[in-house]
Length: 472
Image 1 (cartoon, rainbow, N blue to C red):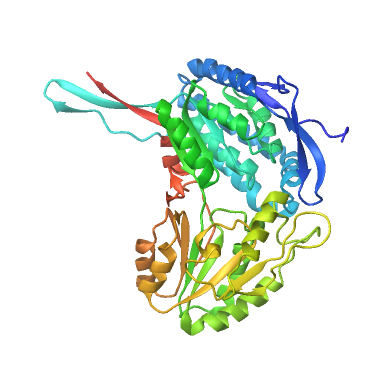
Image 2: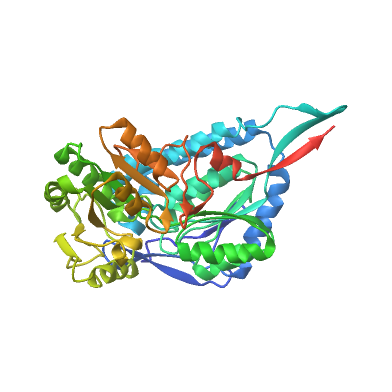
């Protein structure tokens, strides 16, 4: 423990411990052992971070888009140059397979930083025009102010980049609170940012839920962006309503995967299995509910079960996915499986692995019904259900018959059928013959209880701006 440095706050461009001296233990989920400590920030720390952000906003908000672009490009280069350090931080606190993080996630994180660097100089607007004789109207897009940002533990660095980059590109200052179990990569990102930004533009305060509550309620904050649970989103929205703060919510998901009878069963089973259990299913867009045409249901379950049974987890170098994030998350997943109704049948997996760490077998459950807990609620673990359907209408009713609306996919060779599904999904993201892929140019956000607002894309940048009408 003494060889592992504490994870510190970054306030006004400087690292600092919590004023109280309080710290949180950080546990490596692959071993279950304490692997570090982080600052446990209180109200004084939040005050200091918000004051630094408010002070920095005065000058950063009037910088040119070109200045912001240059700063973000330098930050992207700095992050890219520290790939191994970021991998150390991410793997130690999430347990992810290192090779998968460096191959699949890290390049996309750097790309998002570079995308928003370019987007800073491409702000859309309406051309000036005369809507009243003798007067010219124009629109200005201006930064909102101090932004509070709260990120989750499943993709700590990626979510921090998705939040910080558009806010900074738009001319805002930020105070980001990472998840209590995974603060290291966000703290490191803020240290890299401090090398290229004025002090206080990007601040990070580590801590627990109380830290987050103090940040959300702080009077200097004008926008709150959170990626997290529905519970957290409701609580934050309620607090923000009292001060009329803008809110940006990316919450849970429970993605349906509609598989029609014209697919190649073996190939589709292999592709879906490869994405369904990525990051141990701890992904709000994870392919969790497979809806399979009744005529191929049994054949698909057999093919899918074989693919899933071959997936590897545990403390092995070539693992397909790592552990659950915490003992509490493993317990939550176990609880869902232990409460399965008698009619449900586990055909693959179903057990937590013995030994150190919070690993769980990839699990497939069939014979479930639409009103079962495992269908209606987000499991957020390596668990997938399979249900049959008979008609397109039935498939769409099952797909939309939950409170979430983040993502969905349809698998078919019929273009018209695919377009009907895309139109019918009540989600913010719809994939055809693929699932889970994101790109910086396209928005990532949901509807219904999955929240509102979007990360990535120009829409993600615009969410951090406000419009002013100017008449001359």
